[in-house]
Image (cartoon, rainbow, N blue to C red; front, top):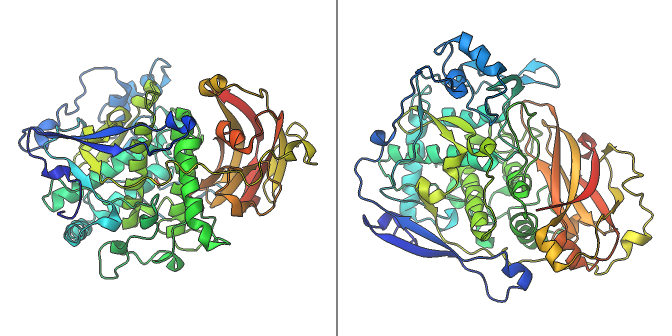
Amino acid sequence: MASLPLSCSSITPTTTTTRTFVTAPPGLSAHNATRTRRFNLSCKAKNGGDEQRETLGNEETFQGKFDRRNLLVGMGGLYGAANLVSAESSPAFASPISAPDLSKCTRGTNLNTQQPLDVNCCPPLSQKIIDYKLPPITKMRFRPAAHLASQEYIAKYEKAVELMKALPEDDPRSFMQQANVHCAYCNLTYEQTGDPSMRLQIHNSWHFFPWHRWYLYFYERILGKLIDDPTFGLPFWNWDNPPGMVMPNMFVKKDSPLFNPRRNQDHLPPAATDLNYAGKPTTDPSKIIPNNLTEMYSEMVRNVSTLEDFYGAKYVTGDKPDPGPGTVERGSHTALHVWVGQATPSGEDMGNFYSAGREPLFFSHHANVDRLWSIWRGLRGPKPKDFPESDWLNANFLFYDENAQLVRVKVADTLENQKMGFVWQEVDLPWLNNRPTARVKKSKVATTTAAPKATETVFPVKLDKVVKVLVDRPKKSRSKKDKEKEEELLVIDGIEVDTAKFVRFEVYINDEDDKADEIIDKAEYAGCYSQVPHKNSTKVKSKIRLGLTELLEDLDVEDDDKILVSLVPRAGGEDITIGGIKIIYAS
Ligand code: C2O
C-alpha cells in the first residue's frame, strides 16, 4: 500500500482527514461551472473494538408485528402461511421491492421457449435473517485503481480470492455462491415478495446502483475477513481514464486466481476498452479513446439532469422487470460486460448476467461503476442526489455477510460510501470537461430532410435498419432560465427487446450521415440503449430519456421547431422494436 497516495487505512483512531476528491478544473464555461463542484472526502476513524458481530443487532423474531417483510421474507413456513395471505392482499402495505423469499427461488424458465434453464443459482437457505446495521467505522477500506495497485496489494488480493475459491461449495461466502448471488437477482429466479405473479430483476431500474453496492460491499468484506485485513478494498477498473482503458494486468496472468479463460481473446492487453462496444471492432481504433471520453461525459454530465436519468426508472412491487436503465448502466457498463465476455452469442462469463459473477474482473468493473455513482453525487452540488421516495429508500434485499449470516439490507443505507466504510483512490476525471463540439453547426437538416415526422411514422417500428424521424419540439427558443428549470428530454418509449440477446442502438440528432457510428465524439450523439443478455429470456418494454438542452445549444438549433432523430441499430437491430418518440420537459 505504500505506493498509494491516499490511504485511509493508515489514519489513526479519532483523526479526521479531509481530502479534495474532485476539483473543478479551471476554464469551465458558465454552463458547466454550475455542474462541477468541489467535494471532500472525509476519512473518519473512531476508537472501536472488534467491528463485527456486536454491531449486528435486531435479530429477527416474529412478535406479532404485522410487517409484511417479516411475514414474507422468512424461510418457508416459519412465520405462518395464514398471515401471509392477508398481508399480501392488503393494499395498505408499502410497495418497495422487498427481499425475496429464498425458499421460493426457482431455477427459472426461458420465457420464450418455456424450457427450464440449465443453470441453478439459488442460494443456501438460512434459519434466520438479521436486519443489517452498518457497523461503526474503525478503519476505512481503501479501493485502489487496479492499474496503480502495488505488488504487495495484488498478492493480498490474490490470496483472498484463492481462499474464497477454496471455501466449501455450500458456504454462502464461496466464490461460486457469491457468483450465484448475481445470477439469482438478475435471472428472474425469485418471485417478487408481495406479487408472486411477477419476477424480481434488479437491473434496468433505479435499484441498479444500490443493489450492486451492497453486492460488492459483502464480497469485499468476505475477502477482507479471509485475509484478516479489515482495510481491504476491491481494486477498481479505472476505465473512464485513459491509463485504465485496458484490461488490468493482474487479471490476465494465467496462474493467478484472478484469471479467467472465458474472455474475448481479442480484448486482452493491449486492446483498448471500448465503452461503446457493439459486438464488433470499432471501424477506426484511433477513435476509441476520444469516443470513450465523450461517452463518459454524456453519461455523467450531459444526460443526467434528473435523478431518473442517472439512476434508471422507478421499479416497485408489481412492476414488470426492466422499466428502464440509467445512463451508466445502459452505456459504459453494458459495453464492457459484453466486451470482456467471450465472443459467443451468450458471452460467458462477463457478457451474460447469469455468469457475470464468475468473472473476477466483474467486481473491479462494478467497483468503478460504484465509484462513478459517488462522483456523480458529488457533482450534483445543491441539486437532489437521491430519490426521496420510500419506494426507493425502503427497498430491501438479502445477502450473506462475512460471517455467513443472512442479512436484510436497505437502499437508504447505501447512499454514502464513507458511512459504509470505503473510499476510492483519487484519480483524474478527464471526461469531466469534455463537452463535444458539433460536426455540423446550425444544420438545417431538420427542416429540409425528407424524413417522416414522428407523428406520421408508424410505431412500433423495427430497428432492422436506420430509422429517421422528425420530432416536434413543443417549446423552442428557451431562455437560460427555462433551461435551468427544465431539461428538454427525448423520450424513446416502448423499447421492446428479447432479453436473451445483446442489443445496442445509438441516437443522433440532426445528422444525415449514415456513418453515425464514427461520430460518437461529436455533439450530434445523444446517447445509446444497450443491454447485457440474460439467460432467462423474456420480452421487456423499456424506456430511455436523452438530454437535449445542451446538445441543441452545441448544434446551435435552439430556435428550430423540430429535430431530426436517427436511431442507428448497432447490434441485434432485428430484435429491437421502438414504441414511440417524443420530447418532454422535466426537472
Ligand atoms: Cu448486475 Cu454489471 O451487472
